[in-house]
Each structure stands twice: as structure tokens, then as C-alpha cells.
Length: 390
Image (cartoon, rainbow, N blue to C red; front, top):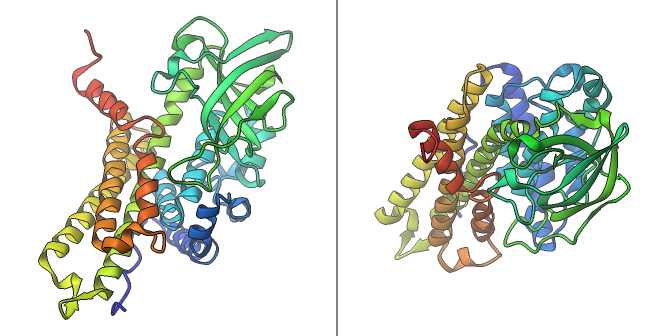
């Protein structure tokens, strides 16, 4: 056995409240999340009771206003909470990020009346949200979505199919982007749809490489009727709302990726200290030590990058370019670190008896969700060189 286990991340936090918050999250992660992670992921079990606990503990509304039950924490702190949760189990960390994303449109663009009516239950009332932008024929090209919302008196009738929806079929509410006007981004409007709405249904969950405990499914809207007071923002503003939400959501993915990478590094370090070959721990061999050093360096760089973007956001400054950079770098880092962790464990790393193979499978999806890493490169390049074809 190794002489000592890796120590928790030494975080730079702005307040005593934030330090206490991280301590609470670590306690919940160690007691309630990590011990069941491998077994429940293998069985495809979604930990709904964990999300209820997180809601009761005030952890599902951290970046939102205390007036509506939120934690009023800066993104600098919220993202580090996500990292801790994702290190324990990505299904939980990513689930909290998606819930935060689903709550964004109402919190940022809803009327005061809408916020008073709906936000308290969403942020601290045990509800769980889903975000509906992608469709079977519109993923990276989200502005070409086909789901329609047609005005009928004081109501809207929504018809279409959304795809790749995290929490599809189990969410209590869906933030839905639907076409209400012309083709392209200017004809899209956002709606808040209750999970039990008549005509709303979900297909069987996708059979995924990783994150088997997190249901990802198509969601069907078969003439789903919602009143106009569930429209979020102005008609035609939905795509701008969606992009604004994704800038913040990409930081959530970046933080989750660093959580997975940190967990993979910790597993590799623990194993390397305990595994003996040729009469000494394999952690004594220079080739492996250099691998661990590179893994740790990339993780620290990723953490610094997502935190720098978060601080820009907290200061009210533009951060879209930095969010894309953070998502790109952190998710590529997670994939590389997790792959190296499997290599360090050797044959054991390829078995389900150790968590390294799960980290590797989970890291892959982070390079795809909320804008593929190819899309992130396009976003970054536009900020540097302007739109294509000028």
C-alpha cells in the first residue's frame, strides 16, 4: 500500500463562507456520492436522492440570487464546487451543471413575476432541470432547429423532438428553444415547460460509452401547450439566450473535466506508490514520474484557465472567448490524463475493478457536449480573426 494518499486540492477561495462550502461539498462527496459511484454507474442508476440532498443543502442554486433561494456565490466558487462533485462522480457534477444551465434563462431573462413564481422551487425546492437546444438534425448548427411553437390565443403549442437531453424523461422542468418565426437564429424563442406537461414524452435513454447513470434521451413535444407567461424573454430572443447560457455552461463543463482529471491523477498516484516492480515502487521510475508531473501540470493549468474565465464573468466583463478556451483545454486535458492513468495502472487500468477505465470513458463525452471542441476552436478563432468569409 502507498505511504500516503493524495491530499485534497489546496484551493484559493475568496471568503470563509466559500471555504466552509467546499468542506460541506467534500463531506457529501465522500459520504454520499463516491462510495456508490462505480456500482451505480455500472448498473445505470441515476442518484436522484443525491440531487434532493444537494437541493436541501443549497447546492443546486449556488450562482443565483438569495432572494429566490440561490446561494449568491460567484462563479469562481460555484465552479470549484462542480469540480469537487465531478471528481466524486461525473453524473452528479455534470447534472448540477446542466440544472444550473436549465435555470439560467429564467434567472437572467425572466420577468420578476416569473422568477418569484418558479425560481424558488427550481433552486431549492428539489426540482431538477433539463436544457433543450439540440435536435436529431441540428447539433453544432443549433440555429437550424426545427421544433416549432405556434401561437394559439394566450398559449403556445410546441411540436418537435429534442435530442441528447441530459435528464431527459426524469426532469421536472425543461428550458426549451423552439422556432416561433423566420428561419435562422432570429426566429427562436425560449420557453419554460413543466416536466409533466401533456404531450411531453421521452424515448428510451441512449446506450452510452460512459455516464451510464445519467439518462440522456430524446424528448418529444407532441402539441405541448404552455401559456404565454412561460415564454422567457422576448419572441425571437431565444437563440441569444441559448448562447449566453452556453458561455456559462461551458465553464461548468471545464470544471467537471478538471474534476475527472484530478480523480484520475489521484488514482494513478495512489497506484504508483503501492505497486512494486523490480523491488521498488513503480513511482520511483523516471518515465512514470514524468508522466505524473505532466498530468498534474496540465490539471493546474486547466484549473487556472477556468478560474480566470470565471473571474471575468464575476466582474461583469466579456468572457466568451475564455470560456471556449477553458472548455477546450480542460476537456482535452481530462481525456489525456485519464488515458495516461489507464496506462500507469497497466492491465489493471483496463479492468472495471479500478476506476481509471471509467474516468477514461467519461472524459470522452466532455469533449463533445455543450459544443464540440472543434466548435470551441471556431469560437476562439472568431474572437481573434473575425467571422469567416469576411
